[in-house]
Length: 568
View 1 (spheres, rainbow, N blue to C red):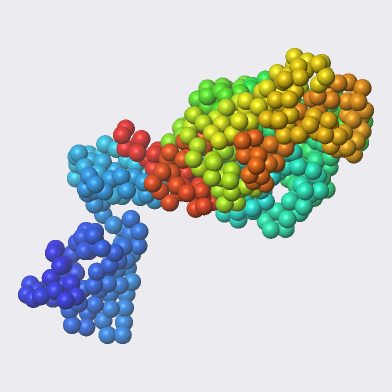
View 2: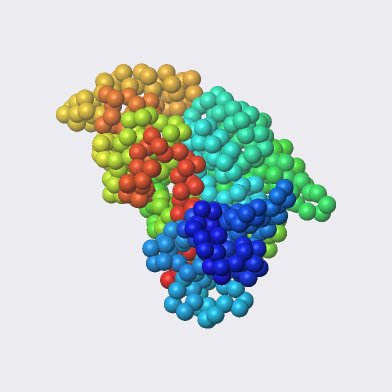
Protein backbone atom coordinates (compact mmCIF):
# COMPACT_ATOMS: atom_id res chain seq x y z
CA UNK A 1 0.00 0.00 0.00
CA UNK A 2 1.48 3.32 -1.08
CA UNK A 3 0.95 5.83 1.74
CA UNK A 4 2.83 8.72 0.13
CA UNK A 5 -0.38 10.48 -1.10
CA UNK A 6 -1.29 10.97 2.58
CA UNK A 7 1.93 12.73 3.56
CA UNK A 8 1.23 16.09 5.16
CA UNK A 9 1.26 18.62 2.34
CA UNK A 10 1.00 16.05 -0.47
CA UNK A 11 -1.28 16.97 -3.39
CA UNK A 12 -4.57 15.17 -4.06
CA UNK A 13 -5.98 12.83 -5.26
CA UNK A 14 -6.25 10.20 -2.53
CA UNK A 15 -7.84 6.92 -3.61
CA UNK A 16 -9.45 6.28 -0.22
CA UNK A 17 -9.53 7.67 3.29
CA UNK A 18 -6.36 7.50 5.41
CA UNK A 19 -8.17 5.23 7.88
CA UNK A 20 -8.94 2.72 5.11
CA UNK A 21 -5.40 2.99 3.74
CA UNK A 22 -3.94 2.22 7.18
CA UNK A 23 -6.17 -0.82 7.53
CA UNK A 24 -4.81 -2.14 4.23
CA UNK A 25 -1.17 -1.18 4.93
CA UNK A 26 1.55 -3.49 6.22
CA UNK A 27 4.44 -2.45 8.54
CA UNK A 28 6.68 -2.39 5.46
CA UNK A 29 4.49 0.33 3.94
CA UNK A 30 4.91 2.52 7.01
CA UNK A 31 8.64 1.75 7.14
CA UNK A 32 9.03 2.83 3.50
CA UNK A 33 8.11 6.37 4.55
CA UNK A 34 11.17 6.68 6.80
CA UNK A 35 13.89 4.75 4.99
CA UNK A 36 15.54 8.01 3.96
CA UNK A 37 14.37 10.35 6.72
CA UNK A 38 13.84 9.97 10.48
CA UNK A 39 10.13 10.93 10.59
CA UNK A 40 7.06 11.32 8.38
CA UNK A 41 3.60 12.82 9.05
CA UNK A 42 0.35 11.63 7.46
CA UNK A 43 -2.85 13.71 7.64
CA UNK A 44 -6.48 13.30 6.59
CA UNK A 45 -8.82 15.78 8.26
CA UNK A 46 -8.60 15.28 12.05
CA UNK A 47 -6.70 11.99 11.66
CA UNK A 48 -2.96 12.48 12.02
CA UNK A 49 -0.27 9.78 11.98
CA UNK A 50 3.37 10.40 12.94
CA UNK A 51 5.84 7.69 11.88
CA UNK A 52 9.41 7.67 13.26
CA UNK A 53 12.34 5.29 13.46
CA UNK A 54 13.26 4.41 17.06
CA UNK A 55 16.44 2.64 16.00
CA UNK A 56 17.60 0.31 13.25
CA UNK A 57 15.01 -2.31 14.21
CA UNK A 58 11.87 -0.57 15.52
CA UNK A 59 9.28 1.90 14.29
CA UNK A 60 7.05 4.15 16.43
CA UNK A 61 3.62 5.08 15.09
CA UNK A 62 1.54 7.72 16.90
CA UNK A 63 -2.07 8.02 15.67
CA UNK A 64 -4.06 11.09 16.81
CA UNK A 65 -7.64 12.19 16.29
CA UNK A 66 -9.34 14.96 18.18
CA UNK A 67 -7.91 14.94 21.70
CA UNK A 68 -7.04 11.23 21.66
CA UNK A 69 -3.84 9.45 20.58
CA UNK A 70 -2.46 5.93 20.37
CA UNK A 71 1.22 4.88 20.34
CA UNK A 72 2.43 1.67 18.70
CA UNK A 73 5.92 0.22 18.38
CA UNK A 74 6.39 -2.03 15.36
CA UNK A 75 9.31 -4.21 14.35
CA UNK A 76 10.93 -2.86 11.20
CA UNK A 77 11.00 -5.33 8.34
CA UNK A 78 14.29 -5.98 6.67
CA UNK A 79 15.34 -3.36 4.17
CA UNK A 80 17.70 -4.09 1.30
CA UNK A 81 20.89 -2.10 1.62
CA UNK A 82 22.55 -0.24 -1.18
CA UNK A 83 26.19 -1.19 -1.77
CA UNK A 84 27.31 2.25 -0.58
CA UNK A 85 25.38 1.80 2.69
CA UNK A 86 27.03 -1.47 3.70
CA UNK A 87 30.29 -0.13 5.25
CA UNK A 88 28.39 2.21 7.59
CA UNK A 89 25.91 -0.54 8.47
CA UNK A 90 28.74 -2.92 9.39
CA UNK A 91 30.43 -0.22 11.47
CA UNK A 92 27.23 0.30 13.47
CA UNK A 93 27.44 -2.60 15.88
CA UNK A 94 23.87 -2.15 17.07
CA UNK A 95 22.47 -3.22 13.68
CA UNK A 96 22.16 -6.94 12.88
CA UNK A 97 22.35 -7.68 9.16
CA UNK A 98 21.61 -10.67 7.00
CA UNK A 99 22.34 -11.73 3.45
CA UNK A 100 19.90 -13.49 1.17
CA UNK A 101 19.49 -13.92 -2.55
CA UNK A 102 22.65 -11.92 -3.25
CA UNK A 103 21.65 -8.82 -1.22
CA UNK A 104 22.31 -7.48 2.27
CA UNK A 105 19.36 -6.51 4.47
CA UNK A 106 19.01 -4.52 7.68
CA UNK A 107 17.88 -6.59 10.65
CA UNK A 108 17.51 -10.31 11.20
CA UNK A 109 15.61 -12.41 8.65
CA UNK A 110 11.85 -12.65 9.19
CA UNK A 111 10.43 -16.16 9.53
CA UNK A 112 8.50 -15.87 6.27
CA UNK A 113 10.95 -13.82 4.22
CA UNK A 114 11.34 -14.99 0.67
CA UNK A 115 14.66 -16.48 -0.34
CA UNK A 116 17.28 -18.42 1.63
CA UNK A 117 19.37 -16.53 4.21
CA UNK A 118 23.00 -17.63 3.80
CA UNK A 119 24.77 -15.29 6.23
CA UNK A 120 23.95 -13.39 9.41
CA UNK A 121 26.03 -10.62 11.01
CA UNK A 122 24.72 -10.26 14.57
CA UNK A 123 24.76 -7.06 16.58
CA UNK A 124 28.15 -6.65 18.28
CA UNK A 125 29.02 -3.86 20.70
CA UNK A 126 32.16 -3.11 22.75
CA UNK A 127 30.40 -4.55 25.80
CA UNK A 128 30.33 -7.93 24.01
CA UNK A 129 34.09 -8.10 23.39
CA UNK A 130 36.49 -10.09 25.56
CA UNK A 131 35.88 -12.31 28.58
CA UNK A 132 32.67 -11.57 30.56
CA UNK A 133 34.47 -12.91 33.65
CA UNK A 134 37.06 -10.13 33.35
CA UNK A 135 34.35 -7.48 33.24
CA UNK A 136 32.56 -9.02 36.22
CA UNK A 137 35.71 -9.47 38.31
CA UNK A 138 36.83 -5.85 37.89
CA UNK A 139 33.41 -4.22 37.72
CA UNK A 140 34.03 -2.69 34.28
CA UNK A 141 31.79 -2.38 31.24
CA UNK A 142 34.50 -3.16 28.70
CA UNK A 143 37.48 -5.55 28.70
CA UNK A 144 40.06 -2.85 28.05
CA UNK A 145 42.85 -1.52 30.30
CA UNK A 146 44.91 1.66 30.17
CA UNK A 147 48.18 0.20 31.44
CA UNK A 148 50.51 1.69 34.03
CA UNK A 149 53.26 3.92 32.65
CA UNK A 150 56.06 4.54 35.14
CA UNK A 151 57.04 7.90 36.52
CA UNK A 152 53.43 9.00 36.85
CA UNK A 153 52.92 9.13 33.07
CA UNK A 154 50.05 6.80 33.86
CA UNK A 155 48.64 9.74 35.78
CA UNK A 156 45.82 10.11 38.31
CA UNK A 157 43.91 11.89 35.54
CA UNK A 158 44.13 8.79 33.32
CA UNK A 159 42.99 6.46 36.10
CA UNK A 160 40.14 8.74 37.14
CA UNK A 161 38.91 9.31 33.58
CA UNK A 162 38.95 5.59 32.81
CA UNK A 163 37.21 4.67 36.07
CA UNK A 164 34.44 7.21 35.56
CA UNK A 165 33.87 5.90 32.03
CA UNK A 166 33.49 2.29 33.18
CA UNK A 167 36.99 1.14 32.23
CA UNK A 168 40.01 0.50 34.45
CA UNK A 169 43.31 2.38 34.33
CA UNK A 170 46.51 1.82 36.31
CA UNK A 171 48.57 4.50 38.01
CA UNK A 172 52.27 4.49 37.01
CA UNK A 173 53.91 4.42 40.45
CA UNK A 174 57.22 2.97 39.27
CA UNK A 175 60.20 5.25 39.87
CA UNK A 176 58.30 7.72 42.07
CA UNK A 177 58.96 8.43 45.74
CA UNK A 178 56.44 7.07 48.21
CA UNK A 179 54.96 10.43 49.30
CA UNK A 180 54.10 11.19 45.67
CA UNK A 181 52.55 7.75 45.22
CA UNK A 182 50.54 8.14 48.41
CA UNK A 183 49.15 11.49 47.31
CA UNK A 184 48.05 9.91 44.03
CA UNK A 185 46.44 6.91 45.76
CA UNK A 186 44.48 9.16 48.10
CA UNK A 187 43.31 11.43 45.28
CA UNK A 188 42.29 8.61 42.96
CA UNK A 189 40.36 6.76 45.65
CA UNK A 190 38.61 9.95 46.75
CA UNK A 191 37.57 10.70 43.17
CA UNK A 192 36.49 7.18 42.22
CA UNK A 193 35.22 5.68 45.46
CA UNK A 194 34.29 2.08 44.68
CA UNK A 195 34.74 2.45 40.92
CA UNK A 196 37.53 0.46 39.22
CA UNK A 197 41.14 1.63 39.58
CA UNK A 198 44.56 0.02 39.71
CA UNK A 199 48.13 0.82 40.75
CA UNK A 200 51.50 -0.37 39.51
CA UNK A 201 53.97 -2.47 41.49
CA UNK A 202 57.25 -2.31 39.58
CA UNK A 203 59.85 -4.97 40.33
CA UNK A 204 62.95 -3.44 41.91
CA UNK A 205 65.72 -6.06 42.16
CA UNK A 206 68.31 -3.55 43.37
CA UNK A 207 66.04 -2.19 46.12
CA UNK A 208 63.55 -4.86 47.27
CA UNK A 209 62.69 -2.67 50.25
CA UNK A 210 60.98 -0.26 47.83
CA UNK A 211 58.62 -3.04 46.72
CA UNK A 212 57.82 -3.87 50.33
CA UNK A 213 57.20 -0.24 51.25
CA UNK A 214 54.95 0.22 48.21
CA UNK A 215 52.85 -2.79 49.21
CA UNK A 216 52.62 -1.42 52.77
CA UNK A 217 51.30 1.83 51.33
CA UNK A 218 48.76 0.07 49.11
CA UNK A 219 47.46 -2.07 51.96
CA UNK A 220 47.23 0.97 54.24
CA UNK A 221 44.93 2.73 51.79
CA UNK A 222 42.82 -0.27 50.81
CA UNK A 223 44.13 -0.69 47.27
CA UNK A 224 42.57 -3.82 45.79
CA UNK A 225 44.16 -4.16 42.33
CA UNK A 226 47.80 -3.93 41.26
CA UNK A 227 49.67 -4.43 38.01
CA UNK A 228 52.89 -6.36 38.67
CA UNK A 229 55.37 -5.48 35.93
CA UNK A 230 59.03 -6.10 35.05
CA UNK A 231 59.15 -9.07 37.45
CA UNK A 232 61.61 -11.87 36.79
CA UNK A 233 60.07 -14.09 39.46
CA UNK A 234 57.78 -13.97 42.47
CA UNK A 235 58.82 -11.76 45.38
CA UNK A 236 57.51 -11.70 48.96
CA UNK A 237 56.00 -8.27 48.32
CA UNK A 238 53.68 -9.29 45.49
CA UNK A 239 52.63 -12.50 47.27
CA UNK A 240 51.93 -10.60 50.48
CA UNK A 241 49.69 -8.17 48.63
CA UNK A 242 47.73 -10.96 46.97
CA UNK A 243 47.10 -12.82 50.22
CA UNK A 244 46.26 -9.84 52.40
CA UNK A 245 42.56 -9.97 53.40
CA UNK A 246 42.25 -13.55 52.09
CA UNK A 247 39.35 -15.27 53.89
CA UNK A 248 36.48 -17.74 53.64
CA UNK A 249 32.78 -16.96 53.31
CA UNK A 250 30.10 -19.62 53.15
CA UNK A 251 32.71 -22.24 52.34
CA UNK A 252 34.21 -20.28 49.44
CA UNK A 253 37.61 -18.58 49.27
CA UNK A 254 37.40 -14.82 48.93
CA UNK A 255 40.51 -12.99 47.67
CA UNK A 256 39.72 -9.25 47.57
CA UNK A 257 43.21 -8.30 46.38
CA UNK A 258 43.80 -8.84 42.68
CA UNK A 259 47.12 -9.08 40.85
CA UNK A 260 47.39 -8.46 37.13
CA UNK A 261 50.80 -9.73 35.98
CA UNK A 262 52.31 -8.15 32.86
CA UNK A 263 55.05 -10.47 31.55
CA UNK A 264 56.66 -11.47 28.28
CA UNK A 265 58.02 -14.95 29.00
CA UNK A 266 56.23 -18.16 29.97
CA UNK A 267 58.80 -19.07 32.62
CA UNK A 268 57.97 -15.80 34.37
CA UNK A 269 54.23 -16.21 33.80
CA UNK A 270 53.96 -19.72 35.23
CA UNK A 271 54.71 -18.80 38.89
CA UNK A 272 52.00 -16.14 38.66
CA UNK A 273 49.56 -18.73 37.29
CA UNK A 274 50.31 -21.08 40.18
CA UNK A 275 49.68 -20.85 43.90
CA UNK A 276 52.31 -19.28 46.15
CA UNK A 277 55.31 -21.58 46.83
CA UNK A 278 55.15 -23.34 50.25
CA UNK A 279 58.56 -22.01 51.32
CA UNK A 280 57.52 -18.43 50.67
CA UNK A 281 54.28 -18.99 52.57
CA UNK A 282 56.22 -20.36 55.53
CA UNK A 283 58.40 -17.26 55.58
CA UNK A 284 55.39 -14.95 55.48
CA UNK A 285 53.69 -16.85 58.31
CA UNK A 286 56.90 -16.71 60.37
CA UNK A 287 57.02 -12.94 59.88
CA UNK A 288 53.30 -12.75 60.78
CA UNK A 289 52.62 -11.11 57.42
CA UNK A 290 49.82 -13.67 56.88
CA UNK A 291 48.07 -16.16 59.13
CA UNK A 292 48.50 -19.92 59.04
CA UNK A 293 44.94 -20.26 57.76
CA UNK A 294 45.61 -17.79 54.95
CA UNK A 295 48.64 -19.88 53.98
CA UNK A 296 46.39 -22.95 53.72
CA UNK A 297 43.83 -21.09 51.59
CA UNK A 298 46.61 -19.67 49.41
CA UNK A 299 47.31 -23.14 48.03
CA UNK A 300 43.93 -23.01 46.25
CA UNK A 301 44.27 -19.75 44.31
CA UNK A 302 46.72 -18.44 41.70
CA UNK A 303 48.86 -15.41 42.45
CA UNK A 304 47.41 -13.64 39.42
CA UNK A 305 43.85 -14.00 38.13
CA UNK A 306 44.89 -12.03 35.04
CA UNK A 307 48.15 -12.58 33.15
CA UNK A 308 48.97 -10.23 30.29
CA UNK A 309 51.50 -11.41 27.72
CA UNK A 310 53.34 -8.27 26.62
CA UNK A 311 54.53 -8.30 23.03
CA UNK A 312 56.67 -5.65 21.28
CA UNK A 313 56.02 -2.64 23.49
CA UNK A 314 57.48 0.50 25.02
CA UNK A 315 59.81 0.26 28.01
CA UNK A 316 60.83 -3.23 29.17
CA UNK A 317 60.12 -5.67 26.35
CA UNK A 318 61.41 -8.84 24.75
CA UNK A 319 59.98 -7.72 21.41
CA UNK A 320 58.06 -10.96 20.80
CA UNK A 321 55.07 -11.00 18.41
CA UNK A 322 51.61 -11.04 19.96
CA UNK A 323 50.47 -13.74 17.54
CA UNK A 324 52.94 -16.09 19.23
CA UNK A 325 52.56 -15.02 22.84
CA UNK A 326 48.79 -15.20 23.27
CA UNK A 327 48.34 -18.81 22.04
CA UNK A 328 51.41 -20.01 23.97
CA UNK A 329 50.26 -18.32 27.18
CA UNK A 330 46.74 -19.68 26.79
CA UNK A 331 48.02 -23.22 26.44
CA UNK A 332 50.24 -22.74 29.49
CA UNK A 333 47.20 -21.49 31.43
CA UNK A 334 45.17 -24.51 30.32
CA UNK A 335 47.87 -26.94 31.48
CA UNK A 336 48.17 -25.27 34.89
CA UNK A 337 44.39 -25.09 35.28
CA UNK A 338 44.07 -28.82 34.48
CA UNK A 339 46.50 -29.52 37.34
CA UNK A 340 45.25 -27.02 39.89
CA UNK A 341 41.50 -26.96 39.12
CA UNK A 342 41.03 -23.44 40.44
CA UNK A 343 37.47 -22.34 41.07
CA UNK A 344 38.21 -19.28 38.92
CA UNK A 345 40.61 -20.06 36.02
CA UNK A 346 43.17 -17.30 35.35
CA UNK A 347 42.48 -15.12 32.33
CA UNK A 348 44.98 -14.34 29.57
CA UNK A 349 44.97 -10.85 28.05
CA UNK A 350 47.09 -9.14 25.43
CA UNK A 351 49.39 -6.10 25.35
CA UNK A 352 51.97 -4.67 22.99
CA UNK A 353 51.32 -3.38 19.49
CA UNK A 354 47.59 -2.81 20.04
CA UNK A 355 46.87 0.60 18.55
CA UNK A 356 44.15 0.41 15.91
CA UNK A 357 40.88 -1.51 15.49
CA UNK A 358 42.49 -4.22 13.35
CA UNK A 359 45.21 -5.02 15.91
CA UNK A 360 42.70 -4.99 18.76
CA UNK A 361 40.39 -7.31 16.84
CA UNK A 362 43.35 -9.58 16.07
CA UNK A 363 44.21 -9.86 19.79
CA UNK A 364 40.64 -10.88 20.59
CA UNK A 365 40.58 -13.34 17.70
CA UNK A 366 43.71 -14.96 19.15
CA UNK A 367 41.70 -15.59 22.31
CA UNK A 368 42.71 -12.72 24.57
CA UNK A 369 40.15 -12.12 27.32
CA UNK A 370 41.01 -8.43 27.49
CA UNK A 371 43.45 -5.94 25.97
CA UNK A 372 45.88 -3.48 27.52
CA UNK A 373 47.27 -0.38 25.81
CA UNK A 374 50.28 1.66 26.84
CA UNK A 375 52.38 3.72 24.42
CA UNK A 376 49.40 5.38 22.77
CA UNK A 377 48.08 6.71 26.08
CA UNK A 378 51.20 8.82 26.58
CA UNK A 379 49.99 11.01 23.74
CA UNK A 380 46.73 12.09 25.39
CA UNK A 381 45.56 15.16 27.26
CA UNK A 382 45.62 13.31 30.59
CA UNK A 383 49.09 11.73 30.33
CA UNK A 384 51.55 12.86 32.99
CA UNK A 385 54.26 14.02 30.62
CA UNK A 386 55.26 17.23 28.87
CA UNK A 387 53.65 18.89 25.89
CA UNK A 388 56.93 18.56 24.00
CA UNK A 389 56.97 14.77 24.48
CA UNK A 390 53.37 14.52 23.26
CA UNK A 391 54.27 16.51 20.15
CA UNK A 392 57.21 14.18 19.49
CA UNK A 393 55.08 11.07 19.96
CA UNK A 394 52.36 12.40 17.65
CA UNK A 395 54.94 12.54 14.83
CA UNK A 396 56.32 9.03 15.40
CA UNK A 397 56.22 6.27 12.82
CA UNK A 398 56.19 2.57 13.61
CA UNK A 399 59.94 2.28 12.93
CA UNK A 400 60.97 5.31 15.00
CA UNK A 401 61.98 3.28 18.07
CA UNK A 402 65.22 1.86 19.44
CA UNK A 403 66.50 -0.12 22.42
CA UNK A 404 68.69 1.42 25.13
CA UNK A 405 69.92 0.43 28.61
CA UNK A 406 67.28 0.37 31.35
CA UNK A 407 67.88 2.71 34.29
CA UNK A 408 66.55 0.28 36.91
CA UNK A 409 68.58 -2.71 35.65
CA UNK A 410 71.59 -0.94 34.19
CA UNK A 411 74.27 -3.23 35.63
CA UNK A 412 72.77 -6.44 34.19
CA UNK A 413 72.35 -4.93 30.72
CA UNK A 414 68.55 -4.95 30.54
CA UNK A 415 67.03 -2.80 27.80
CA UNK A 416 64.03 -0.55 27.33
CA UNK A 417 62.41 0.38 24.03
CA UNK A 418 62.28 4.13 23.51
CA UNK A 419 61.39 6.76 20.93
CA UNK A 420 64.35 7.28 18.60
CA UNK A 421 62.95 10.10 16.49
CA UNK A 422 64.22 13.36 17.98
CA UNK A 423 66.21 11.74 20.81
CA UNK A 424 69.70 10.22 21.14
CA UNK A 425 68.98 8.47 24.42
CA UNK A 426 69.48 4.93 23.09
CA UNK A 427 72.92 5.70 21.61
CA UNK A 428 74.16 7.78 24.54
CA UNK A 429 72.96 5.34 27.19
CA UNK A 430 74.57 2.47 25.28
CA UNK A 431 77.93 4.29 25.30
CA UNK A 432 77.66 4.61 29.09
CA UNK A 433 76.89 0.92 29.44
CA UNK A 434 79.83 -0.09 27.25
CA UNK A 435 82.10 2.20 29.26
CA UNK A 436 80.88 0.60 32.48
CA UNK A 437 81.44 -2.91 31.11
CA UNK A 438 84.94 -2.18 29.79
CA UNK A 439 86.44 -0.26 32.71
CA UNK A 440 86.71 -0.95 36.44
CA UNK A 441 86.49 2.71 37.44
CA UNK A 442 86.09 6.21 36.01
CA UNK A 443 89.80 6.84 36.38
CA UNK A 444 90.56 3.95 34.02
CA UNK A 445 88.43 5.41 31.21
CA UNK A 446 90.64 7.07 28.54
CA UNK A 447 90.77 10.84 28.90
CA UNK A 448 89.26 11.58 25.49
CA UNK A 449 86.32 9.30 26.22
CA UNK A 450 85.81 10.85 29.67
CA UNK A 451 85.71 14.32 28.16
CA UNK A 452 83.22 13.19 25.51
CA UNK A 453 80.92 11.66 28.14
CA UNK A 454 81.08 14.72 30.38
CA UNK A 455 80.48 17.19 27.55
CA UNK A 456 78.00 15.37 25.32
CA UNK A 457 76.11 13.13 27.75
CA UNK A 458 76.38 14.09 31.41
CA UNK A 459 76.55 17.78 30.65
CA UNK A 460 78.76 18.32 33.72
CA UNK A 461 81.90 17.00 35.41
CA UNK A 462 81.78 13.41 36.64
CA UNK A 463 82.89 14.56 40.10
CA UNK A 464 79.89 16.90 40.33
CA UNK A 465 77.54 14.10 39.34
CA UNK A 466 79.10 11.90 42.01
CA UNK A 467 78.67 14.61 44.63
CA UNK A 468 74.93 14.80 43.98
CA UNK A 469 74.63 11.03 43.65
CA UNK A 470 76.47 10.43 46.90
CA UNK A 471 74.18 12.85 48.73
CA UNK A 472 71.09 11.14 47.27
CA UNK A 473 72.17 7.62 48.27
CA UNK A 474 73.33 8.71 51.71
CA UNK A 475 69.73 9.74 52.39
CA UNK A 476 68.02 6.88 50.55
CA UNK A 477 70.27 3.91 51.37
CA UNK A 478 73.64 4.70 53.04
CA UNK A 479 74.92 1.22 52.23
CA UNK A 480 74.94 2.09 48.52
CA UNK A 481 76.91 5.27 49.15
CA UNK A 482 79.43 3.44 51.34
CA UNK A 483 79.86 0.69 48.77
CA UNK A 484 80.43 3.25 45.97
CA UNK A 485 83.08 5.06 48.01
CA UNK A 486 85.01 1.79 48.27
CA UNK A 487 84.24 0.42 44.79
CA UNK A 488 85.00 2.64 41.77
CA UNK A 489 83.06 0.37 39.44
CA UNK A 490 79.90 0.71 41.51
CA UNK A 491 80.45 4.46 41.77
CA UNK A 492 80.55 4.68 37.99
CA UNK A 493 77.31 2.65 37.76
CA UNK A 494 75.50 4.95 40.18
CA UNK A 495 76.66 8.07 38.34
CA UNK A 496 75.62 6.68 34.98
CA UNK A 497 72.28 5.68 36.48
CA UNK A 498 71.90 9.32 37.54
CA UNK A 499 71.94 10.28 33.88
CA UNK A 500 69.58 7.47 32.88
CA UNK A 501 67.13 8.44 35.60
CA UNK A 502 67.26 12.13 34.78
CA UNK A 503 66.54 11.57 31.08
CA UNK A 504 62.99 10.37 31.79
CA UNK A 505 62.48 13.23 34.26
CA UNK A 506 63.67 15.80 31.70
CA UNK A 507 61.16 14.34 29.25
CA UNK A 508 58.26 14.47 31.70
CA UNK A 509 59.01 18.06 32.74
CA UNK A 510 59.78 19.23 29.19
CA UNK A 511 63.36 20.41 29.83
CA UNK A 512 63.99 21.88 26.37
CA UNK A 513 67.79 22.07 26.70
CA UNK A 514 67.84 18.29 27.20
CA UNK A 515 65.48 17.27 24.41
CA UNK A 516 68.15 15.17 22.68
CA UNK A 517 68.51 13.13 25.88
CA UNK A 518 64.83 12.39 26.41
CA UNK A 519 64.05 8.82 27.44
CA UNK A 520 60.52 8.29 26.13
CA UNK A 521 59.24 4.73 26.50
CA UNK A 522 57.58 3.88 23.22
CA UNK A 523 56.79 0.88 21.04
CA UNK A 524 55.85 0.56 17.35
CA UNK A 525 52.20 0.86 18.39
CA UNK A 526 52.59 4.63 18.58
CA UNK A 527 53.34 4.81 14.87
CA UNK A 528 50.49 2.43 14.09
CA UNK A 529 48.06 4.63 15.99
CA UNK A 530 49.30 7.81 14.30
CA UNK A 531 48.87 6.18 10.89
CA UNK A 532 45.31 5.08 11.71
CA UNK A 533 44.36 8.45 13.23
CA UNK A 534 45.59 10.44 10.22
CA UNK A 535 42.79 12.49 8.74
CA UNK A 536 40.45 11.88 11.70
CA UNK A 537 39.48 13.86 14.78
CA UNK A 538 42.22 11.99 16.68
CA UNK A 539 45.07 13.14 14.43
CA UNK A 540 46.25 15.96 16.70
CA UNK A 541 47.31 14.93 20.19
CA UNK A 542 45.41 17.88 21.69
CA UNK A 543 42.14 16.15 20.76
CA UNK A 544 43.16 12.75 22.13
CA UNK A 545 41.76 11.59 25.46
CA UNK A 546 42.38 8.23 27.03
CA UNK A 547 38.66 7.39 27.06
CA UNK A 548 38.16 8.71 23.52
CA UNK A 549 40.92 6.42 22.28
CA UNK A 550 39.52 3.43 24.17
CA UNK A 551 36.03 4.01 22.77
CA UNK A 552 37.29 4.49 19.21
CA UNK A 553 39.40 1.33 19.28
CA UNK A 554 36.73 -0.85 20.84
CA UNK A 555 33.95 0.41 18.57
CA UNK A 556 36.24 0.13 15.57
CA UNK A 557 37.12 -3.45 16.49
CA UNK A 558 33.42 -4.33 16.44
CA UNK A 559 33.25 -3.02 12.88
CA UNK A 560 36.33 -5.03 11.89
CA UNK A 561 34.95 -8.26 13.36
CA UNK A 562 31.54 -7.71 11.75
CA UNK A 563 33.18 -7.05 8.39
CA UNK A 564 35.01 -10.38 8.69
CA UNK A 565 31.72 -12.11 9.44
CA UNK A 566 30.23 -10.51 6.36
CA UNK A 567 33.05 -11.85 4.21
CA UNK A 568 32.30 -15.32 5.53
